[in-house]
Amino acid sequence: MDPLNPTTLIRALTAAALAGLLLAVGLRLTWAEVLAALRRCRMGWVLLSNFVLVPVITLAVGSAFHVERDVLLGMALLAAAPFAPVVPVFTRMARGDLALAAGLTSVFPFLSAVFTPAVFLLCLKFIPGAESMKFNFLTVLGVLVATITLPLGLGVALNHAQPKLAGKLLRPVEISSEAIGALSLAYVTAVEFKTVLATGWLALTAMAIVFELSLLAGYRGGGDSRSSRLVLALGSSNRNIALAVLVAASSFPGTPVVGAVVANGLLLILLGLLHVAWWRFGAKDG
Image (cartoon, rainbow, N blue to C red; front, side, top):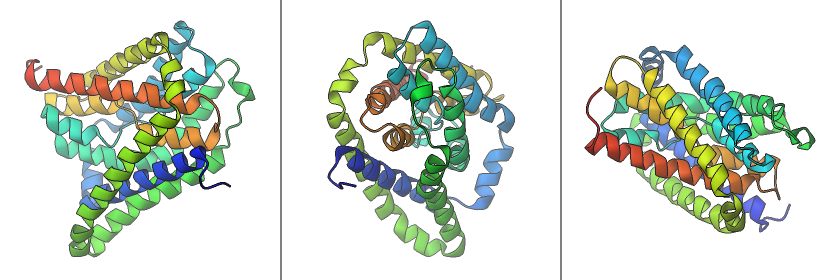
């Protein structure tokens, strides 16, 4: 495999960024905090809305707008990858429940390693023409376990066994992984720039509708307090771009799927920021 091949570099940078970000999350957490996050919300609804409802909404809206196959595959990948690492940042800005956001953002990588490829494999059955696309579930599962589950578990274990060492490592790991993440997003955007531009306003409109419906579903099912509803709304609507890019680059190299993930993912970030600004400065409680 050519190490200078753009697809290889995208996969390497994305995997390194994901692993670093999740190692940093783990270095901040204890197992007790992870379990507390599970107890503090309607976990059944959270799983159902993120791994079933959002993908169903995405396929329905994409089909209604007659989004072309490769773009719809990118949308489906995002739909199968919930709770972006940026959710705690957005939650803090929106003045939501930061502890809940951090807890759920730490739990979902464990779940996504299995559920993301499984949900996407099921989505392929409902996308016309996708039956010809090759998607190796076990290969993707192995990549995700190595990239997200193991670093996160390692970070939590290290914080439990050696909290002082974990504290010393935390900031360097955060800085380096955030820098690699920014480089990865910039590089994949540059490489896939023509594909990103070719995504088209129709597909982006469909993804914007998916965002709003997902945000509403998360907010309505997010519990009794406004702060917890904000967390579920942001987690349901802001999907994990890095995770989706990694799966796309591993499974569909040389296709427009990666570019579709990037284009729609950038749109989700923009819409997320707009909603954060509204909740912080414009919206009333309720």
